[in-house]
Length: 221
Image 1 (cartoon, helix red, strand yellow):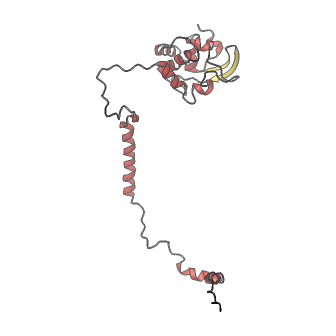
Image 2: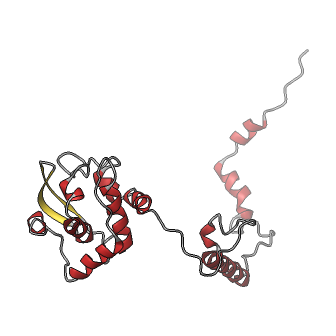
């Protein structure tokens, strides 16, 4: 003889009516969950203390981290001697780094200096790059707009100014470095442009607030 199977409790639950379910849950309705957990919010005093510590830590790092330069944390390094001359920076090296900044020169003129056909002119063997520094410095200081012929090709686009007060707000030494770089890169063989040269032209054109046109620049030596 077979042993009668035990009744499936799920079958009993399925037979429970909605009224019985509501009646079974009615005693706990209206009660807050975990009412015996004794949970409490973080005291405001601790919140202010932690916030203050985070603010202090960020301020301290901002002032004394030395921008995490390896020389700052070199335990075997020696401090510079008083009156020691600063190591000169190669303008070509500095100019290359400035040229490669996203959104600056490299975006339009490309890593190889060839530009984009029909849109942005080449810097390679360009008469505007290797020629008059009077024109070249003004272009980078204040920008250029309108039609221009470069290496025998016509363009009609706009270039923003990089000088003080412009969107990039580059200093005279940065402009001098990037111009020296493009005049000596990609086979170009023109002389360097000094910071003093850029400063002199900027001072001379201090009243200039608008980009140059090729027609204006062609009047310059």
